[in-house]
Image (cartoon, rainbow, N blue to C red):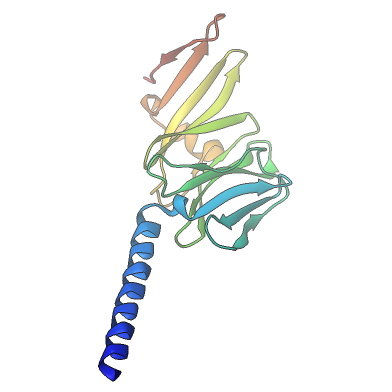
Length: 180
């Protein structure tokens, strides 16, 4: 009888450890399966558990762009704009959240005409800045960069080949022009 109970407990412990290891591996490679991120009242980014009761405010500020943070293509990072409003040329901060550690990193500080961003690949974000009616400029930024790209300070030292432009046509499509 004792051998049977010991065997059942051993099997239970092995299964429990296997489940915990599997969850940890999945969370490491796909945190988006376990966490949903959204903005609350355009002032807080909130993480909420998908399968379990968990809710945590990741960051609360004065104002965020009014849309939910966007996952990278590999679902490992999130990006969102924070309206810090230091000055007209340092108003929008593009921030990255690492959901495994809940650390937030600023990778871009842009002017009031900063319009939006899109994930270009797993480690690159394309940031758009309004240029004129029907046109916008963009720059690709590596999210692994050490310091944020500050448009007001770093633009003057950029090589023009690092920037591109998009011009919208009357039919709603656009023409993309590479820098240089």
